[in-house]
Length: 246
View 1 (cartoon, rainbow, N blue to C red):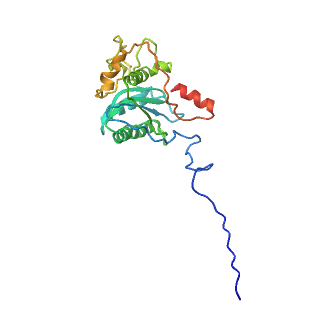
View 2 (view 1 turned 90 degrees about the horizontal axis):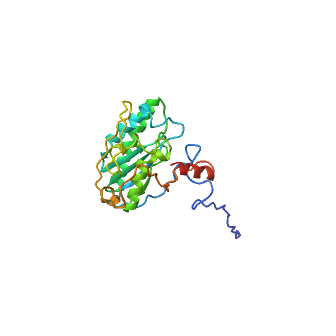
């Protein structure tokens, strides 16, 4: 007897492609910095780097935390081919202007800076967990105008956040040793004033000569809005609000 063949039907589930709910779930309640491919960088192009602190931690501008950050910046000012040229320490984030031959040098240099600093801050506060939960953001500087804007943004960032008077310089930044002010700022001789971290001398044309084509920086100049939006938080309106605070 000849048997009749029947084709078996199997439920086909497609595992490839984009679908709702796919991908690694965030460790925290809120998603972090999107893992986008970083822009290409030439050897003579500096970077503006932004590092965000985890929510709920004390200010980086005070006490033992400030001393640890300054020490870490000094120790990492010229390591693994990355040079920290300027910096600004804010309550919950850091701004850095760095030079490096390539992105591999930047990655090694940033790891050398942030990993020991995170351990030191956790030890100071007797805690465990992420200190810098998101990967750092960076912006390639490729023109003299960008270079000047980046210098103004980093060095004057304290005024943007309302923690530094308009006619003063931020002692929690490299502003006291910056030589590009239109007029020499008066640095208050306060015994309790924080020390300035050691920074590497600029070597790229953009951060030594190029930016000066557009004039020295006035103490009263305020930073222009920066396109970096930081970490997404809550709804869209709240995300935009946090974007404007960076």
